[in-house]
Length: 329
Image 1 (cartoon, one colour):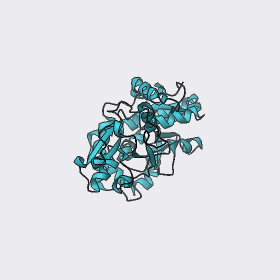
Image 2: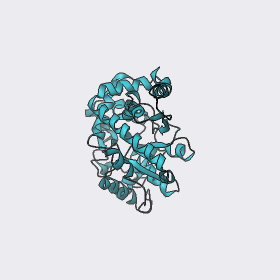
Image 3: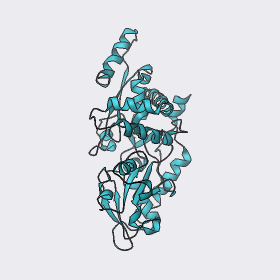
Image 4: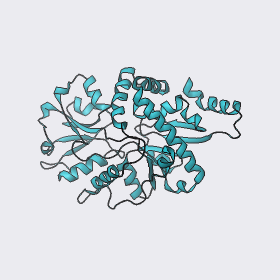
C-alpha cells in the first residue's frame, strides 16, 4: 500500500521535520503503463529521492488511449515522458514542447520479422505487411520508409501498414511479416509465445541509422519563464537521474519496486526484471543531459522524408540544457 500513501507520508515527514512550507507538487505523465521502462521515477519516489528535494511527485501511468502530448496540453501534467519524434511533430503543429532532460541515450525500437517470411534485409520490405504502432509512435517508422524510398500505401513496390495494437498478435497469427517491438518488451513477448531467436530476424533502428531519441522529459515552453517552476524541474531531474542510476546498479530491486506500484497486477517479476536489464542498456552513459549530436540526428532523420517528412522545418527552441546544467552542478 506504499504507493497509495506516498504523498501523505512525505507531507507528514516534512511537517515533523519543521519544514517551513509544504513540498512542491509536480505531476509526471508516463508514456505507457507502469513497467520497468519508467523504473527511475518509481525508484526516486520509493527511495525518497523526490522527498529529499522537497517535491511531492505524482506519477500517472499511461496506456493505449493516453497520449502524453494531449495530457500536458490539457493541463493534466507538468512533465511528460515522450519520444522526440512525437514531441517535435506536436511542436510543429503548435504545442510548444521543450526537452529538458534525456535519460535514455539509446533507442530500443526495432522491427521483428519471422524468418520463414523470407525477409532478410530492408530490401525485402516491398510487398510485405508491416505492423506499426500509431498514436505518435509511427513517426520513426514513416521516416525510415521515406529514407528507403518505400511507399507506405501498399502495392508491389510499397509496404502495407497494419495498424498494430500494443501486442505482437499480428506476427504470431500470420497477419504481418514483421511487427514493431521494443528490445525490452514486445520482443520478449514473441519469445515467450514460443518462438526462438533463430525463428526471428530483427532490424534495430539504431543499426539502420534511423534511430530517434525516446523517453525524454518534456514541458511546455511558456512555463520555463517561471523561475519557481524551473527550480522544481531542476530538483525533479536531479532526483530522477539519481533514481535511474540506482536502477542501473540494482536492476532486480528496481524491477521489484516497479511491481509494487503496478496497481493492475498485470506485470510479472520475470518480465519486469528482464525488462529492467534491457532498459539499463538504454540509459547507460546518460547523465540526463540531451546530447546535441543525437538530437540533430533525430531531427535530420525526421526531415528526411521526401515529399512527406515527419517535420518540415528545423525546430527552434525545442530543447534546453538549463535544467540539467543546474541539476548536475
